[in-house]
Image 1: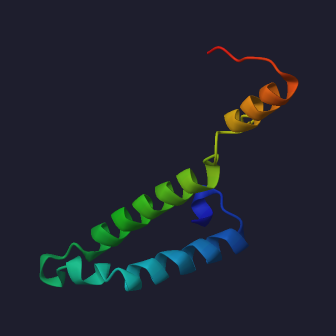
Image 2: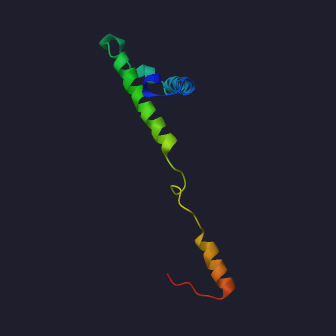
Amino acid sequence: MRRRGCSPEDAQDLTQQFFARLLAKRWVRATDQSRGRSRTFFLAALNHFLANEWDRARCEKRGGGRMVFSLDGVAVEARCLGTVLSW
């Protein structure tokens, strides 16, 4: 994770999160040591985890930074002023 540009603290946090999720989801059972593909499995799982964390860290919640206003509030205000809204 440090090779990807994470600070030491972030790399430690991400590593702990990855292994916590790995154990909680019991992904280890999906590996087959006799086939010798454990390293590939863990590397792919880590890459997917990091991609999901990157997306989650950069997503904008609730409207993507746009100003939200209530249409109910506009209608109530229009009634108080005696105007009619036509959509």
